[in-house]
Length: 153
Image (cartoon, rainbow, N blue to C red; front, side):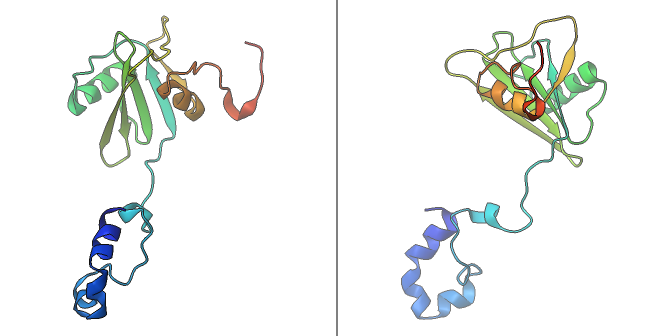
């Protein structure tokens, strides 16, 4: 059970007396198991473009250092863009997202295997959402094409 649902089930016997219903704001709401995420108005972070930095990054870097790196590599941190970095061994990555109001920083580590990281002369490249999903799983992300279109490689 989740937070509020668990608290309400523990206190179910108190609802018969009525005082719990008068003082607890969630007493009359059905339990969805989602907590606050199930409420109206909650949403995901909007991402319009995903950019991959080819050069390895220091995974000890925090939010401010990664933001400086985004500005150095990509020129600016644009709203609703995600910026993906990996370490030299390619077993860890960080994703920095500018949501238009603030900055989000997420990290991922593979316990086994490596992320398939590109090498080349370009300092960065743009990838699709499907490619990012494959990348974070450690799969070959270069294969998924947009909209299921098959083209010559």
